[in-house]
Image (cartoon, rainbow, N blue to C red):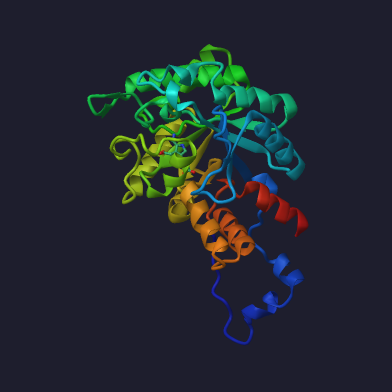
Length: 335
Ligand code: PBG
């Protein structure tokens, strides 16, 4: 905990003295937000006609490969260091065995290669989970209603190796199977990919805030049941810290807390307990709340977006995955 001194009695301490002008406020600002703190999640579709606005995420669109290329150029211009790719795959090709997840030609892998062509210096992060290719919308294989753990981990390893072959810099396992970080790390070492980073979705909660994302990737109507047998119960704090400790021990370079705003306490806990690179995901439902209220004229979009992102820095995060990334980076450039 930082050392906190008791303020001198009034009038020696007039807290308002340092709030009087922008220059004085800037001198004592404890945290700053910059484009370098942002990771931009994008949706890329292979389905003709599916590109365009996502109704539950007003202002966000599914992109074609061409759109992904332009997004990469925009990220470079704005100083955003990383893009995270989420695939919207052809519903007709989703199966129970999810074999497209490790197909070098799936839309996720094509998007990685496309982005690397135009922006080799931009970090490309992936999502590792079977849901975009799974007919029942789950992150793992489903047999008789059960989400299989170890069989899923083996498939995730294949999926990851295909992403690395396509050029991924950072792997983002979001599936919440046990043992996946260790399995991925070992497979990467064995295949000679010593420098591929893993940003583990270590503290990922079973959240209602993922709804619009599931619309965006076309998983909404499919999900059979819920994800509570593998994602963390929102009631739990110690469990999240145990997950982080385990994932670090298994070889994660960075860890993520997800969702973001309702879990700032967990961000602070992770920062203070481990002191490792800590990220938060301001997820689709958080985006929708702010964007929807701003569209209705109830909130000032710019003020609330920048405040919400700064709150992650104050909570101890090194960075934030946010759909607001390009907009926020443009505002920060003006400021
Ligand atoms: C699943 C995945 C999800 C998100 C990222 N990866 C949804 C889920 O777990 O159901 C959600 C991101 C968001 O809501 O913005 N692999």
